Image 1 (cartoon, rainbow, N blue to C red):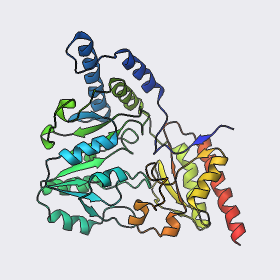
Image 2 (cartoon, helix red, strand yellow):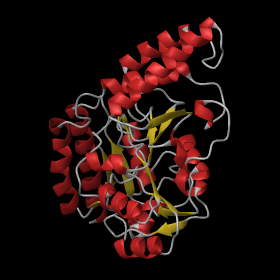
Image 3 (cartoon, rainbow, N blue to C red):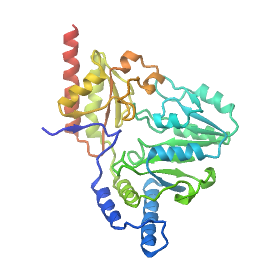
Image 4 (cartoon, helix red, strand yellow):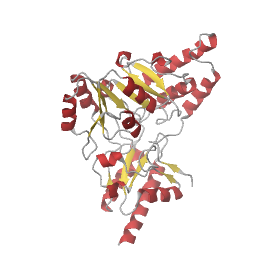
Length: 358
């Protein structure tokens, strides 16, 4: 029986369209910044990929290609024309480490920003950079980006949203374009590893440092990656998670509660955090792996850490429950049969645990 991969929030398989585009890009090996004919040809292909990324995302502003989401966030956080920084408590670890001196905004038990604290901190700032993700990489919680964007704009601040887990998977809604800067990752949506982008409304929002990408980053441009990125986005034409694929998880939700487990986020989507009673997340990972099913315990950057999830802690999830939580994330090529097999394996594992405890 073939293995089942349900860790797409960490990374997802390369789409065939992206692979083909990259192969074409490798044939144009010249540096896009070189002035000769080969360089100009590569530059034309790079700019074509940039326009295609903008078109696929419906973005009207500028696009800076980066080595990935982490670098895109680093450019925004370190080069934004702002005096202070506010960051949500449930951002990705890479964001929190980059914004080490920022004021942290707590979240409620449902993972959404704590409104009163946000308003209080916002009122105390003169020209803030507010950093709030669109969708959480561990729980799948969607923030109210429209309301946040409205408030940041009212105080004259800048708004950065990390859309690594949503771009290309669900269509940007009109209010999400109100963010001043958006972080996008290629390998989360079927593009290649090693490339991402910072969408920025206006270059004037950033301080230039010299080098490539209009002077906002250094390093030779990754042409094959950019071409693969554009092709992957253009292939994102169908709903990322289809109702027929997601349906078994909706049925599992009831069973989880009956058995005394917890679904951390009751929303339906492609990232799910599920706590199983009586069995640690690490033990679950090993047992699922032995059954040919790949899941994870939190985000990839912290799943090997001895520390508990900062996201679940910020949501007030008890340590004992957080320690029993695994993450299941669906992808562009996930099938209903794969989801059904996972649900059957989860229920069997939980029921056996309940029998042992009885």
